[in-house]
Image (cartoon, rainbow, N blue to C red):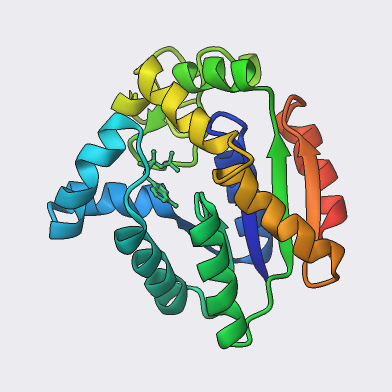
Length: 223
Ligand code: AMP
């Protein structure tokens, strides 16, 4: 099964993605995480991408698109959940063209909807577990509050992402996400239109609910 997931930063997209990934045994391909691995490993690509990421800007398409398409090819043969890509119209079209060219079916596109202000608060409360990026911890969300200053799932040390604590960078990321002309929502609506033509299936979820209720609605809609 191949799935695209959209949602503003802070919508719980990573958490839901992890659940879907486990259920269907998919490769979870997250463009932001691939960039962070490159930065951590000190690669050339990481060095080029870092300044854009720190500012909350998109990394240019000529770096991002080949990186993601290569990862889909190398890690996605048995099904994938693609998260964080596409984020603009060029990426949306290039991905669709690449899938068509290889006869790869896009089974579902998921959109988690969330009000911009709620998303901003959730981001600022987010804490990252050193052991697993997808252990949910957020100081502003009661059901996933950390255990003191440790991960509520595994007790690991927690940290914040620099770009999560910078309001200007968050605003920039949301400007990109909520832009329906050429931003990420434009990319999502590109697939919504394809779904209306029967070429994929589009699932819309209300991100304001609890993790469990969103999960239940989501899993009931996936075959
Ligand atoms: P994320 O972890 O998805 O919030 O991504 C972190 C950062 O990586 C973003 O703010 C962008 O700078 C960069 N990034 C991730 N995905 C993309 C993409 N599809 N296109 C361009 N830049 C991206």
